[in-house]
Image (cartoon, rainbow, N blue to C red):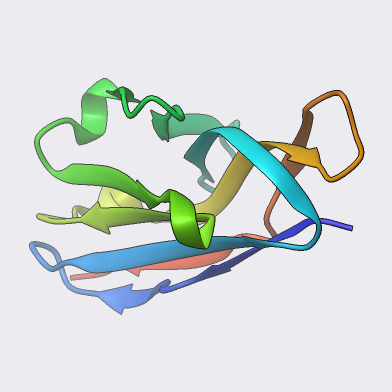
Length: 121
């Protein structure tokens, strides 16, 4: 069984930085896209950043120039470097990945448990 485990959330002041990590573990044959979503209280979950296996990325307009997504395919891990954080970045951040398990012929979408990022002044 494959699972995603996030780490790196916490409290930070405006202008500060945090780095989130998400590691996929289990019987993994391959991983296609990996990404980060976030959900603030009272809001819908939204895409923050996404990276596909070929390396191309896309970002929400609100984080362009401040956040950077990267992945280490050898470690089945995706990172989100968040700089110049703002109070409106406060949310639970969820890792997302399309994973094909060993012995499977199709990709399934998985979610992590979420990690809270709080930007306070």
